[in-house]
Length: 363
Image (tube, rainbow, N blue to C red; front, top):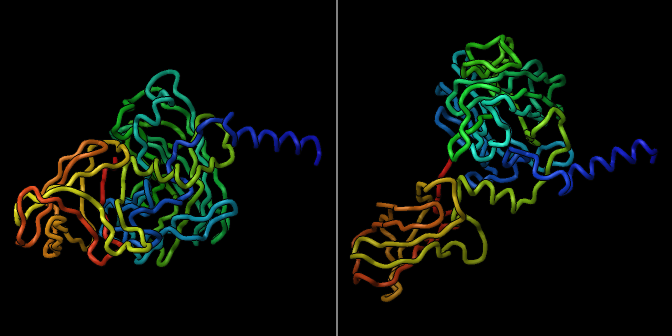
């Protein structure tokens, strides 16, 4: 190994070690965590739909491309997110993949004052289409944005792209638990801006002349290795352990249950007490979340009276929840059954190893 190569390797080791510190502002940039879909394809309707944890798709039309975590990825990665166009249209006002970053996590950028830091975005991308595409940053109020471009040179080939955004010295940038910064990969828009690589008092996210993804039937676009860091230099991707990445994602969304395994079809998910013959109260504890989460049920459940050892499986439904950021209670209703107030009870899956409690505290 030459001296130059040796020094370069040493620099890479230092960058990727504790000396470099936590660099990547993006959570789940390697697309490893997919709590909601577990790698299944999902229809990306015009509502906010998560293709994987922390990356959501949103559009202004009723087109339904699909999104899926797949194992097609460049060297050094195991997964990517793949967007596939299932129809052809030239009318959507916008379609985009977004990560909203909590204000607490970008306060060190000092956006909105004279000391604002530049940030560098790097990622791997692959598409059936070639040409100019758009990437942008935007504040939570959608009134400050910076639009840039990248070029895909070869179809169906993984390429690494880097973009540096200068820091914004004006505007309002929140540094609390609300949206501090949006990273946007807009794939289609009926409009577009020619004001590139500069901050403007707009919500623009699409560069004029960029590829119109939704106008190309069966087109695909994939991304992984997304990193955004302070400074004007793109460093090697900061790989974190799966457990650490999962914990970061669970600040915003947690799936309690839904894992397969021995006995999982009837696994217990919560404990509480009977209130009357149609209602039970249960308590929950979970990893600390960004804000008090909303809860929903997914799958088939049963409420077990642990005093009488009877199962109540009819019409189990969530009726009420009162949560803090890491604990709270929820009330379930079920078909009428014999129960004494105060009897201990348990919430189980009911022969459904995918049944889960879903806790949502997304931005």
